Image 1 (cartoon, one colour):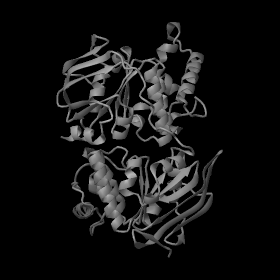
Image 2 (cartoon, rainbow, N blue to C red; image 1 turned 180 degrees about the vertical axis):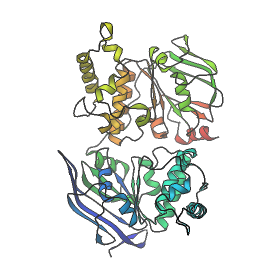
Image 3 (cartoon, rainbow, N blue to C red; image 1 turned 120 degrees about the vertical axis):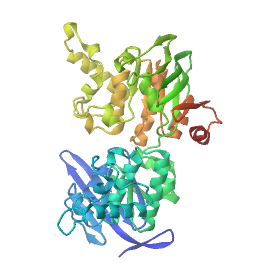
Image 4 (spheres, rainbow, N blue to C red; image 1 turned 90 degrees about the horizontal axis):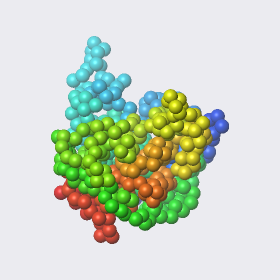
Length: 505
């Protein structure tokens, strides 16, 4: 067996995938892809959306059959036909979208299809809960095995997925964007679990867009682009700029655009806004030509404030003034009529209509703009309108008839931007603008936001990425436990540490 030195120790080679090719009709999704993995290693797989990372892992776990290439597991050629078969030999995958049964208990989810039986051939629930408790304790997880999964926080559900994988004594564990929906605290807990698994000799392939995570867990990094293997590097021997350049095939330049917009008078003024048990005494203003960042821990109330402004939920008290006039949006339609729109943090669940076309997703909230007399829909006018806005936002799609679910996360986000910017709205509330978006598309979104500001819009931006808050905001509102703890000018003295101080103190 091949050995490789990692952190001064000899480690066993678990996996070797090389020259892997996968062809779909008209598309070469993988073109000589490769990666290898050693016991006790975290090998981070990076690349823009559409680079082939997920397809590559689906080939490994038997969802797709490779057309060419070799996969060796523990030194022997590997051919599996399903994730269950892969799991049976010690290869487990945790998908970005959880694969849990929400109405079952934690123990039932961990042992699904592997339930212990009693002498009568029935499920032994006591033994199952006892075994689940041992696994959770081994991972230092304080989760009740009898708890119903849908009652757990997102971070706890992520941990249940890991417990489920370790239940089958996985040697290779694949994690696809595991921190996408986690709080900072939950991410730290996840990293502790990863380090524990690594110390036990589990090899982890970790797919992520978040550069700041590399310093905490990465041993090696492999970069893919257009289905090809670009490079593999030890983390300690590379830099973030080098990784980005390999991912996108070019130097990105400044990630964040210059803050050169002219800040004007107060456009939106919020006074003493409250919703019982959710947020209280919210006071802030938004100026014309400004990006106002909202920072804080998950659950601090940022999204709840956005939904109150958008009329998706109702305030118990407080006042909202737009251009000096008092407004009280009771529904999102009211808010839209006032020129306020909201881009949701959960794009897949609340933002897009997955089975509808790009054009339909843009026009779904804009039918009134292309309706003739007697409410007849002008399809030709809609198409022209969508072509213009798609070109402006650089939406990459084979055609406007393409189903939006087949677009990358960055292009889906641009479609939602197109839906609202086509109306020339005054205020855009953008919740987690780049969640699940690769580094190249992030830069495009940032520049689009600044361009919208230059064209007369004002933006409230909610983000959990502090680098994004600092890079994009003209001012920063910090929230903690349903209240505003501080409003900060974004000057050279403002740091991530300062924001975290007000978010937690």
